[in-house]
Length: 246
Image (cartoon, rainbow, N blue to C red; front, side, top):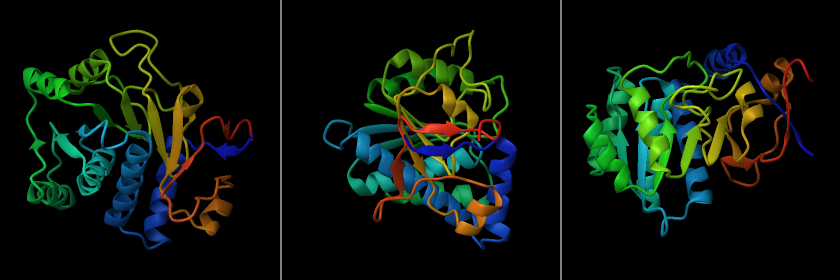
């Protein structure tokens, strides 16, 4: 059984900082590689012919930015993505990502209406959950609480980016409330799995192929090699090691 390191939210943030300040990556580059890996996980698990209409739900932070990038790549693969981005970030990077999608005629919805969102769900075959990543601290607030409730109620397959939205990054899924029992069909962890991954029971990928050997050594990380030119690696069934269990 392959062992894979889990990292806390604090360590994940430190690695991101080191990737930019020591590794010389820009946030644009990291987001592009992360979004590319998300799109490859979709392509691997959900063929274009059977899951053409992909609803990409984006939150206001970097996780949402990964979703915006993934949507662009999915369009290039032949999918018909629709982006739901109810609280768009005004920063230039995110605005450019949205413009890139509009240039491809990918719909980008930036205002939340429950009826509109539920209508989009009925015409979708898959949801990409790029609402919140490792920096999330609950509870969910409007409009994301009703968005996630609608996603769960739709019974559509869900691929979550880095962490299933609404999950505590350390303790996993909610044990009460409307999001109780939320378990996506697929999870793609980025850089390294987070502790909440210990509670995940379905298909699990790792993406974010940008960690150098120096950073692996600095943070004592055990991560699997990526095969060939793939930006993802299947870690389903791997033994996930936390700092306490390593």
